[in-house]
Image 1: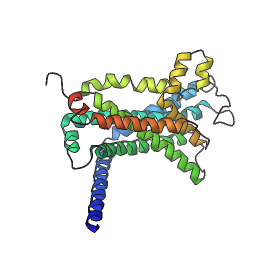
Image 2: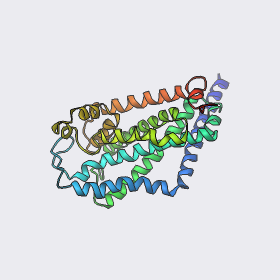
Image 3: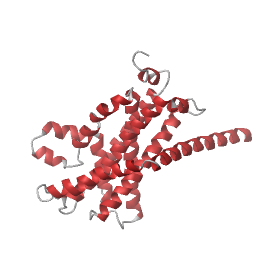
Image 4: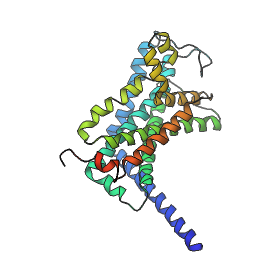
Length: 284
């Protein structure tokens, strides 16, 4: 009995060390890529400084949940821009996975004496850590520019709600990137494939405008697509968490999408199923 307990303890410690090694590797790689952090911040900050400034007096936001009063447009789009950081890094992790696969690193990792799903979970955790670090840097710079989010100075439970929402959304978008990497055979196909994922998810959501604006403008099909877009629910969960309000169905949609994408990615990376066939180059 003691021997069995010791074996389980060693197994758990080995799995934890493997996850730590993968996360540290990704952080170290990111630390050498200064341009990656700059590009991750420049994109949403341009939207905040230029787009929001241009529409500040044109596009008003009515008093709707979770807001208790009228708010400026830059405050409204701030949660959407946090979502943008998480979305782009989640998709960029897909590029890293394709690159690692072509270089043979992923095949080496998947042959490690650990469950395949644990290796993929470790990659997902590493992606989420990087996403949250970049999102935190954006929030700090945005605050310096004058867009202060209401969570600042709030109580502990409020902070934990925001953290839970951000972590869950980062994991969901990372799992989506993980799933996308299964179906991208070559690095050359990455840009085109991502354009069919990133831009529709971002623009057909509540990141830039509320759902009632879409319905009011008569864009019925856009309104309906935005309602079922998982990214919409990710942004809304972050938005409602910032104001410590009930996010409704958003957590269920985010966590359900996370579980589904991760399960499909784990299935796809099985060498006997999707991974071997999907990653084989044409003519090979």
